[in-house]
Length: 234
Image (cartoon, rainbow, N blue to C red; front, top):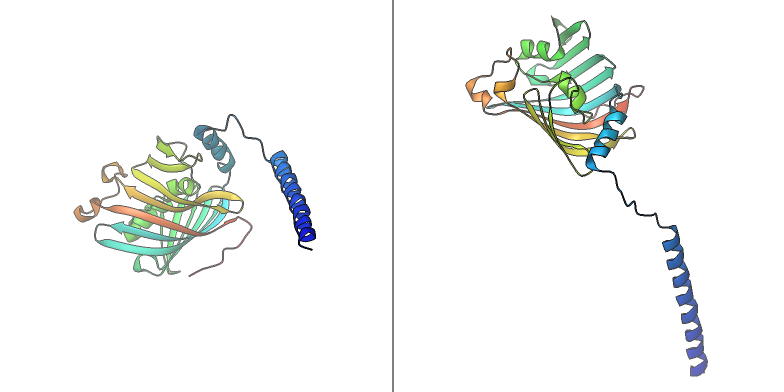
C-alpha cells in the first residue's frame, strides 16, 4: 500500500511539474516586449504639452494657502474655466467670507459677499487691490495643468516621467509635489509657489516682513471636465 501511495504521489508530482512548466511557458510567450529605445524625458514632455495645451474647459476645486511673512490666510477655491473666460469663487477667503472674480478678455470684476464690486484688468489685479494679496491667477491657469505659460521665459526641470518637477517663471518658483489622474488626465495635485520679491510686477508692494517669505500652496481635491459639476468638499 505504501508503494501505491508513493507511485501516486510521484505521478501527481510529475503532473504538477508539467503544469508549472506550461504556465511558465505561456507567461513568457505573452510578456510584453521590452522597448530597446524607450522615450526620453524630453519626448514624454513634448507629448504631455501637446495633450494638455488645449485642455481649457474645466472645473477645479482646491485649498489655497497664502503666506506673506507673519501673515497667513487660507481659502477654498472653485475655478470654472471656459477657454478665455473664468469664474473664480473663493470661500473663507482672507477673512472676508465669499469673493467671486469673473474674468474675460475685456477685464475682471470682483464681487465681495454679493455686495461690493471692483473692476480691473485681471483677476490678479482686482484681488490685490481689494484684499492686498497677490495670487498669480493668469500663470496658474497653466501651472495647474503642469505647463508653463507659453508666452513668457521659463526655466524648467523635468522628472523621469517627463512631467514638470520645478519651474521658474514670472518671479515665481513652482514645485510640483504630487500628480494624480483626473478626468483621464495626469495633472498636478499639490503645488508650492514661492515668490522672488525682486521679480514680481511693479504694482505689487510687499512689506519688509513679507518680502522674505511670500508663498502660495495649492492642494487640488477635485478636477472635472467642463460639463461636470463640482461637489463642494468643505
